[in-house]
Image 1 (tube, helix red, strand yellow):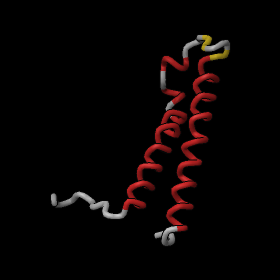
Image 2 (cartoon, helix red, strand yellow):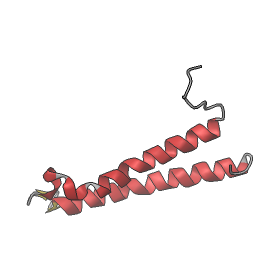
Image 3 (cartoon, one colour):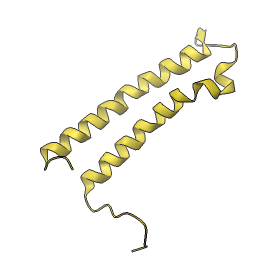
Image 4 (cartoon, one colour):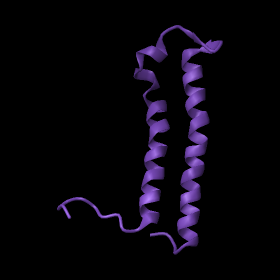
Length: 83
C-alpha cells in the first residue's frame, strides 16, 4: 500500500464520504452563482431569470443529496453506531 493514502476498509465510512462529496456539488454550485458570468447575464431561461432558474435547479438537486447523507447516517447508526 502506498504511504499517505487512507485505507477505506469499512464500506460504511466510504459510503458516507461519497455522500458528503455528492452533497458538496450543489453547495459549491449555489455558492459560486455570483461569480458565474453565464448565470449573471440578463437572460431568460425557461421563462424565468437565469439566476432564479440556476438557483431553483440546484435547490431541487440539493434535496436528494441531503436525503442521501441522512440515509447513510441512519444506516451507519443502525449497523454499529456513529464514529
